Length: 365
Image 1: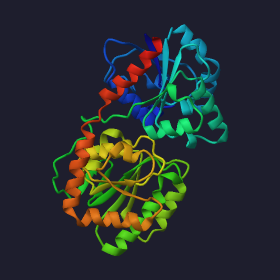
Image 2: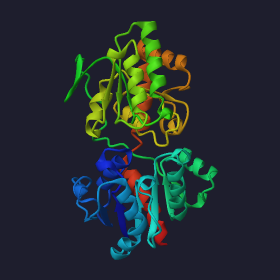
Image 3: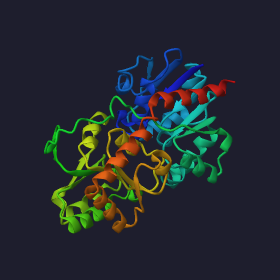
Image 4: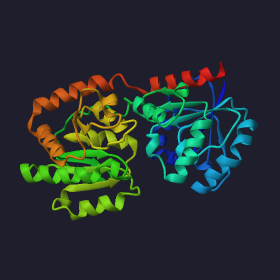
């Protein structure tokens, strides 16, 4: 079975879909027939650790051109390259048209909240045309079923953790976490998520952090890690206007390999997003030996089990209380770290890749 893998829409490895693609390609078994296709600039983006053929597509690097190609040229391209199946890690971005090959859509986001009105309609068409939808959680699957999609073609495969990247580091008790070009003063809380929308709850976390600081006068800082998105100006403004502005640090995009040091240097990972479909930062933080505080909404309980402290992300008081708990109760923090380790050690990209390919191969039966 020859499987094509679409690298379009994955932000050169700097998005959730990009990280997914990087890790899955790294763990592809050697006995399969795979071919990656995308822009020439990405010829080596995803294949540095795994040699698989790459087919360059000569189009402009802009979303309009990419979507036009996926709508009008993809079918002939797949036929020419004799793909039996094509995997789309970023179908919600590239909006693939109808193809004769089996179409496999990887869905790490919650369908009902994807895209604007026009994009949502196109995403629905792509999902309906697909042969298989690989959902990162039961939460995503349930949302798809409630939206009218056939449950028979949806399979749940949880995202993995790269344990060569995310693992506990020895605590040197250093005053700063030095990750060029930053030197971040400890202690701090970390939240890793793109500044993309109100459902990520950055503003609520900032306000809860302010309340925590007023009550405790603790030396902790708040580090917000993630690239700017549509909601970034509002988040930046709230942080700038805060009386604790000097203790709120917004880093922008951080490469995956640098996140480990940020997680390991933190007091806790706080994840208030309410509509999370995959929860990868939560499981990665647990793998780094960091206690996690997170929203009680979305797929997070499904992903993290009993390890975190859960809160209502709209309840600023509740978040502030949990921040105080994790700082003042060292035994609680130790117990959470141990529970997190037990959860994280069972999650890996080898299993994610194997289970995804197993589902894809059933399409040939």
